[in-house]
Image 1 (tube, rainbow, N blue to C red):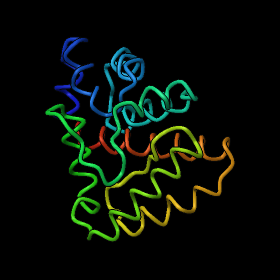
Image 2 (image 1 turned 90 degrees about the horizontal axis):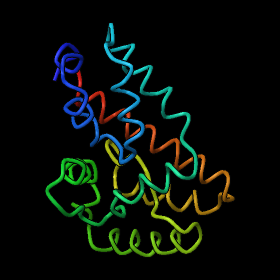
Image 3 (image 1 turned 30 degrees about the vertical axis):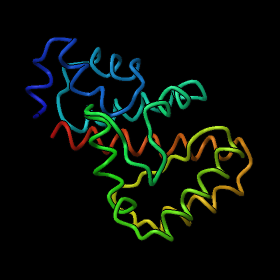
Image 4 (image 1 turned 90 degrees about the vertical axis):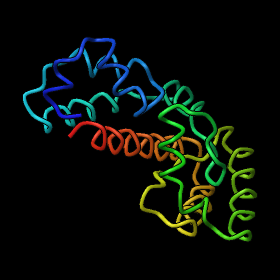
Length: 164
């Protein structure tokens, strides 16, 4: 969809058009409410600004829609389809790497109480596993900030792929 089309959609349709970017309805609603956008740069800038208001509640809400890295996202929703595509490197990884990721995911979830979140697109399975292991050394506050930064990256990447 291009920017003109996005600007011309009704509020409900525009919200639905960006809802797959992140499972935080307030973000999509605020992005839509600020229309019309004069340029893609303005849209992306506003989208990024809105992500900086996210805190623990938003992260928890968004993570409910994210599969574990290395596990296939289920369902027909657009977000599930995007997750499957974004995690292609892990889906194609060998058994040893998948087992290592499974074990590291379990350790992460025990340590932080949530699924590990990383922008998977463009990363190899080995890179994602190394990053997960590195982040296991974070304290709770640092890890929350890293997870929020990854959520921002995922959201903005999905937006730029959806509206151009």
